[in-house]
Length: 193
Image (cartoon, rainbow, N blue to C red; front, side, top):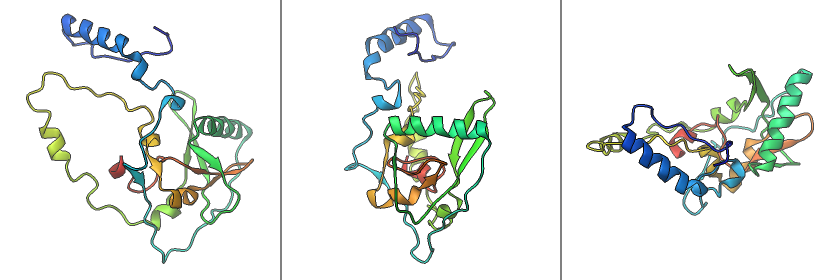
């Protein structure tokens, strides 16, 4: 197999089960998404993320922040990845506008987030984000194996409602962009996911 395409499996599995699992994964490696471009996404006929902005809230355009050269390079790289994966698009006209927040991870790489504070304040909070979680947990009873398959960029497989895309605007030094898919940081995305 391609050395860039690998998965982790539990080290406590019995040898027979481990061998079967490895064989299964190798035979079906073509069905896994190894990069964002491999993901077809979930049909918008099934689900989209809607913001539900309270109309009494006026749009907020955050004041532009300044970044060091090192952070600007990291932002450009991340935006290029988002554009290549078709997760964002450029936007000319804007109502809501948020800043990029860039922080260093433990791996010493940069993580780019968007400051959706003002937008989240305009959206009502879902009081019951996971109404059937007990049912999901109970359904695992009696099974010998439990898989925690990482849903690669799972949030990004769910599209934003077209009328809410332009509310997810964020600015960089080059352009302004909005998300076409559900990003981290928005209120109630966990419940949608």
